[in-house]
Structure formats: C-alpha cells, structure tokens
Image (tube, rainbow, N blue to C red; front, side, top):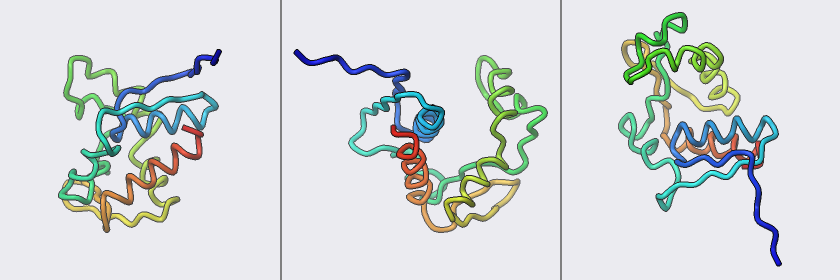
Length: 130
C-alpha cells in the first residue's frame, strides 16, 4: 500500500504569481505542489511586454498601492505590496544577473528576454524545493 502525498500548499497556476508564490512558500519551509494546465509553465510571461516581460513599475506608490489595483477589493494589495515592493523584485532580478531597462512611466522590462525571468522564477522554486 502506498502512502498518499502530503503538501502544506497546493498552488493552481504556474504563471508569474503562481511561480513566485510557490517559491516564497517553499523557501519558508512549506512542502508545495504547483499545478498548471499548460504544457509549459509561464506561457503568459513569455508573451508579455513583447517577449521582454514588463515585470514591475518603478512609479508604484507603495503607500497607496490600491490606486493601481483593479478589482473588487482594492485594499487587498496594500499588505502584499507593502511587504514586497517593486524595489525588492528589482533586487531579486539583480541577484540573478538579469539586466533590465525602464521604458516610460516607470515600466521595467528585461533587456534580453522574458525567458530570463522564467528561469529566475524556476530557480527560486528549485531553491525552495518546489
């Protein structure tokens, strides 16, 4: 008889948010299962920003992130974005050696390819044992 697998968290969707969430949970010691319907993870990342992935916006007002959030509960993002700011994501990109540039209105894009960001997110997941 086999023993059923057990996870602390099961994340549905291996897009940008799912990969990042899985990586963070795994790095905090949780046993994480990440599930996606697509053959390859991060399909939307590959096409975002014309293939260079618009990954954050430097002009986000972290004191009032709800101004930039569209949804039923604009207050939702207040705590999340106060704990992990655009500067934190930029620092993560820098740690992985991913060059980036600003276009206009604070929009940041990878210099080379969205594949660099996907590789970074997968490496962060691996670091957490996801």
